[in-house]
Image 1 (tube, one colour):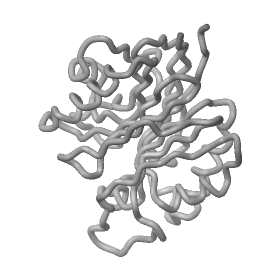
Image 2 (cartoon, helix red, strand yellow):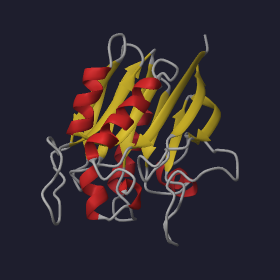
Image 3 (cartoon, helix red, strand yellow):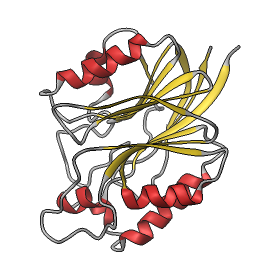
Length: 244
């Protein structure tokens, strides 16, 4: 029987990374507490219309608020990175500056695998199972110097018998993702002319399309880049799919 599922993947921008890199996205939210409240409200409002939300760069403050606001059958699953972001100048405004990968599920879900990459202790992937499908929240390092990350992610996905959905910040454009993952994967493509997943205020050689939904043994019916309302330097990506 075919299962229709939906997900959002979103890099919600850790405050310390934003300040270290002078990201203009936080200019509208000089007070981090207000941004955390707004992010929480948006994520909670998407439940249960969206089955899963795969979130990258989640601070401990945001994770705490999500856990307080979401009630069963929704659940929050998280993986903490060993590396804690450090502010380059002022001290952190966060009560808990740790960084997490987080999966918010509208129904029961179970962690089945988690990896922190050996060459970047602040990147990795978190895999959960929901309705017989493996969903993987991933964040990969930018550049060509980390082939092992792609090999580890692809090998893990190929090893599972269940349908697999990868969502996250791949720090690479669609063609690069396809080449690095290898055969057997399908990458969702939004309609041309829509929003960028990673808008940039200044001209850059880096791609504007680095957040993706990728499937194996499943079919993507629709991909759309949503308006992030200035809460992050990334826009959320919504995907609707079918798994057998």
